[in-house]
Image (cartoon, rainbow, N blue to C red; front, side, top):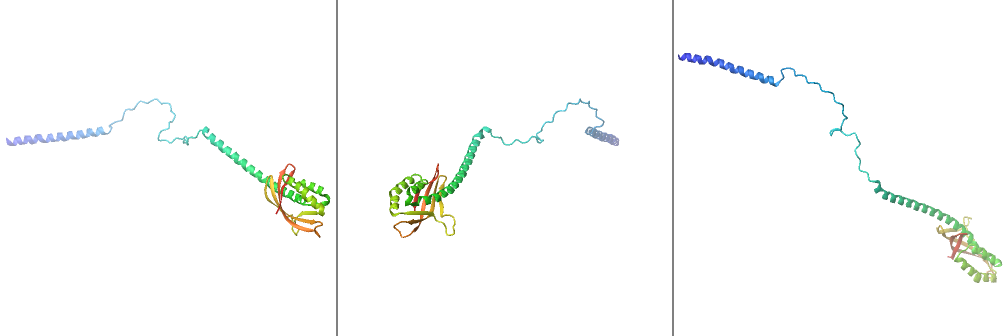
Length: 239
């Protein structure tokens, strides 16, 4: 009896184990089928074509438009500065033009005043007792105030009486170098309307008070000014 019981237990145990194993294999196969498709998928219905839309700029795509530069200032804000700069430029140009013109006029004055001094000096410093009125009148044509009044007074009260009494004759010339170069005269200073000229003068004097001609070398400074009648002598100083 005991052996039968054991056989019945042993006989029923083996089929039970086999059924458990088969169930496990079937479960594994089902799990495998769920992971991958086992057949073709159903076709989807075609969709109607949509109209193309214009491409829009995305945040990732670079923009083809030029980058915006720095904000421009309003023209109204620059107008005062431009006006000031323009006025300054015009003023500078005018100043340069005036300086250039002033330099040209000064150069012209130096040349004209020097020529006038060389011509006037011999006439002013010369006289002959035999024709004093003619000599003094010629000299006065080169003079202007205030020296014109002084010259008239001196020649009338001093020079004329002395020259007549001693038969004086004075002949003045602008000194020249021994080699016959230009007269010894030069411009000390000049402006467009005024010039100072230094001259070296030879004065040959004859009179009843000397036994023969006497030659004196004098330095004379003349101040000349521009007048409507040309350059005139305004002052004469013996140095």
